[in-house]
Amino acid sequence: MRILKGDMVVVRTGDERAKAPRRVLRIVEGGARLVVEGVNRVYRHVKKGHPKSPQGGRLSVELPIDASNVQVYCPKCDRGVRLASKVNADGSKYRGCRKCGAALVAGGS
Ligand SMILES: [Zn+2]
Image (cartoon, rainbow, N blue to C red; front, side, top):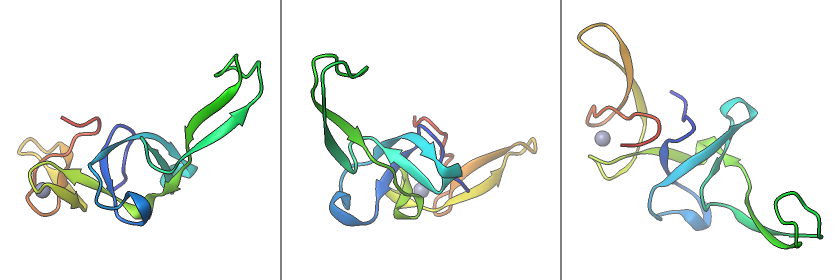
């Protein structure tokens, strides 16, 4: 099961380990890498006239991290979990927590 844009995830490795769940901002390289809010943030120094910073100066940007380093956050388990494909009584599918079965909807709840 893929992590989707808007998911709340926890980062398993590096400096961001054990921090609070964060939101996935962007999926890149077909899901192999993703951009997580506030994770792997760097400052780019830009000149005047940059579209995002007309005055120039420092611009904070998040770099993509490897998707294998994050897990979807389950509010019920209060930890990062693996996703499982679950089926509703009416046959429709949803993404659920592999541990407790709670539905994990992209965009958080
Ligand atoms: Zn769970």
